[in-house]
Length: 480
Ligand code: FAD
Image (cartoon, rainbow, N blue to C red; front, side):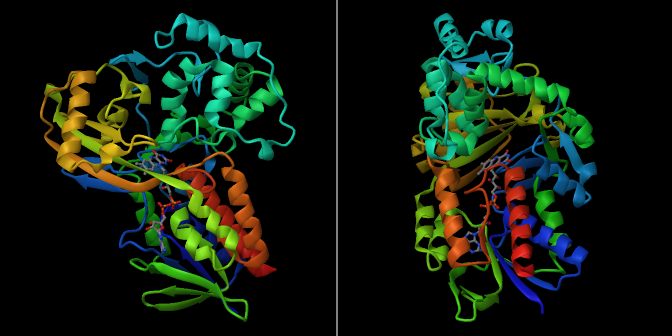
């Protein structure tokens, strides 16, 4: 009998899950009919690449972390390894804005944690008093964490306790919370950087924990050997933009799966015979297993007919952001040498939260003779700028670039991409909330699974890994 699998959402999680189901069912000779429903006319969700006049402009993600294996492994399985481009090694400097000036990111740190103390002490970002407070991490007592899941806390709470406020407000917040467009005092430690909790418990100090981790990484197989395509770069992208990943997934799935763009799942219920019925504006689809990869706001009403606990998913808050790309003739902009960009701590009160020197970091994306900058607008607690029109947004971004970089030129063109309610905020207790919903689903709706950026990690490799785990769980469920 042919097993019917329906995946809701055609972002990277849903597409990677469909591909994993294809690979495994073909290898094992399983008869499967897989349908993917995507509400929008476009596949790929937040992966959005615009290619024009030789420019490759990412509206959403611009790279993936090479260290997390699921991303590069999928790229390899799709035959895209030759397309991988590491970040330009020449663009190795990053700055943090303090007092309206670009100050170099402290050397000798790992995720902001000092691992080379002499190098860290030379930084100009943190005051002498702030540095002294940071080093107290080495001697402060460390509380045990008997039941880690029951003892989640804010990422900011741990870092303030260990390193003091100055390090948090000027280094950790832009560096770590920035990834989530989040607020460091609200984000969950265990759902964002659980290794920090481990460093405190196992080493009694984050500095000692991070230094031990750095030693371990140097000892183990270097990332470059594991993934030759990544070179030594921590981040990689694809030559024609990350959308290539979505396009290749679409190509390999096109004939095998029933891909339905422009089809929103409206409801999901369990029928008396144990199958699931998904209602869309085009009719009803019957499934033996369902994978929900939509953002939490869409997943909560779909799943709450199966388990009331799922309503809790609606508590996962999403922050709105926008990216503004600006292209300039190269002779009109002088960027600091060897730079990849800068971060803006929220205490600076600027309009932008970060700026990437796209043409320096990823030279292949920009024709010769141009410079491309990409700025981020909006983060938790600072979303009011998103109410601006595109023209006002570009004007205010340019004001920041003039003040911070001295760029006064008119851009040759600009591109604003808005991301309403796009960045999930993993609040304290996030992992427990998701685990409870998943446990209830397993009990009341066997064969229904949840995966995606809203639940198990926001990075593209996290989403791919979550989609692949769910694919495996579905096939195991169907085989049982
Ligand atoms: P989505 O991409 O949100 O896909 C979910 C899909 O579900 C959507 O296409 C949606 O239309 C569809 N859907 C919703 N409701 C329904 C319904 N009822 N029925 C059917 N379909 C539905 N990550 C990185 O690794 N590196 C980066 O550099 C990076 N930068 C980022 C920059 C920005 C501006 C943003 C917004 C994100 C960035 N991320 C980055 C995060 C990463 O892009 C996302 O976490 C990831 O793409 C999410 O994939 P997903 O498939 O889980 O969800």
